[in-house]
Each structure stands twice: as C-alpha cells, then as structure tokens.
Length: 224
Ligand SMILES: [Zn+2]
Ligand SMILES: [Zn+2]
Image (cartoon, rainbow, N blue to C red; front, side, top):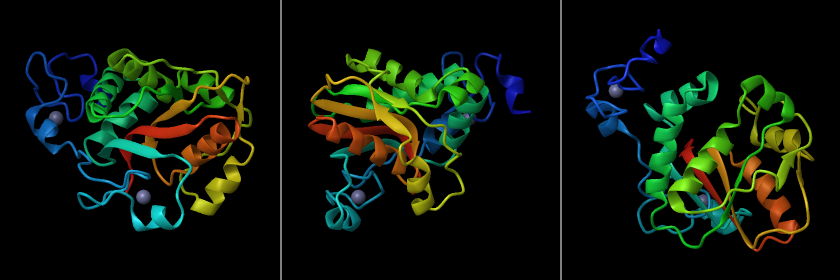
C-alpha cells in the first residue's frame, strides 16, 4: 500500500525504494523527474528551445504574461502531487516547492504570490489548501511575499476534471472575487497543476481588471 512507507525515513517518497539517509527521492526517481526544459513562455506548454510564444498564444494571448512550470505532469510528479494533495503528505509538498523554486531561479521581477483559493467547503474537507502551502514555501525560499486574501473563491464549483475547456470556463464563471482595492503591480498566481489553464485565466483576468499591471503563473506541473 502506498502509505505504508509514509513513516519510514530513508525511503523514496515516490516509489518506496531505499533512497539513502538524507534523500527524499531515490536515484532512479530523481533521474526520472520530467523537467520541462523548454516551453511557451505564456502558457508553459512544451515547445522547441527558442520558441518564445507558441502559435496558439500568438493568435490569442492568454491574460498571464509568463507561465512557469517546473515539470510535465508525469511519473513521479503525479504521484507526489497526489500524495501531497489527497493524503496531506507535507514532505511531498516540500519536495515539489523546492523543485519549483529551482525552476524559478532566473525569473524576472518580485511578484506578490497569490495561491489559487479553494472554496471554504473544499478547504474544510481537505484541511489545507495545497496551492497556499506551495506559495508559502516558495516565498520563504525566494524572499517573496504571499497574499492569501487578495482573491477569494466565492462560489463552490464542481470538480474541473473530466470537463471540456468550454465547460470549465462556464463552471468557473463568477467563482472568484477580488477582495480589497489595494492591489500589487505584479502578481504570480501559484498552483500545483495547470491543466487547461482556465482557472489561472479566470483569476488573471480578475486581477488585471482590478488594476494589477502584470500577472504571471507559477505551477509545479503542466499537463501537455
Ligand atoms: Zn523512487
Ligand atoms: Zn503558448
């Protein structure tokens, strides 16, 4: 069972194999990490090196200026995300945030970090907001500030998984609200996984309409 090695230090948190005394991941999982080396700067979808913006973003620029994803959503990242999100495994969360911080070493600017909010119902059920934990870990590593109250999820929405892009957009309409009027000039929205990007687009549009000058998106993993 996946959780059986939860309390055994020295075992890989992705596959359970012996990992050495101080390692979180075994050498095989470390080597398997699906780093996203080259991607469109606006939507973080894989693209050949030197692409800049992909064709889709050139035709229809998304509201976020820059999107950074550390990984493609594949093994062992999917396993770590699930352990973190659905089993509350904070070690997995720390490993993910640490790697995202590495991917952000050459970022430009010092944005205020805004985690994608959960509805109150979902946060109560889960006990935590995984995006907020990642944002706070990143902020500590990168010397940035988190604002968890700038954007609120004011409407409980259905799970996005299994929905088409159009259904996701409809599902999110009016789901978020900007709280307060003093907005930072530069915001990075933080989330664990970016799938169609509809959640990030919705929040980015809200922030831009509220006076934020530049919105970026920082996520652990991107689904291709
Ligand atoms: Zn492993
Ligand atoms: Zn793109």
